[in-house]
Image (spheres, rainbow, N blue to C red):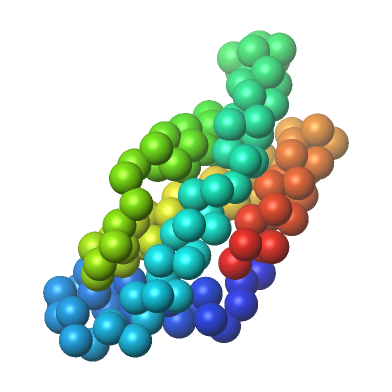
Length: 136
């Protein structure tokens, strides 16, 4: 997944905050982290992508499923449910940004591993990446 350097800095600040819990070290990144959380929260790709994956999973026999599809569906469920968490106005936005980032990477990796499962999975992955990369 491609991401901007500003997004990478915000995620690094979120990781630093998770590791050290020092608010002063990440103070300059709070506004940017809040903007990215709002952008990722407002994406309307998680639910439709999850439904497309579940449709594929329902149409295939249990043995023929790519293992990454189930994992991607669970990651997308987490991302979709996170949209309904209350917005954060202080430094506590960093754990939320970190959760979004880790879930996005999980879904990206799972869909990438399942791409060999057919053209529809590749299209789902490309659509998902295109929308997320615009936000990051």
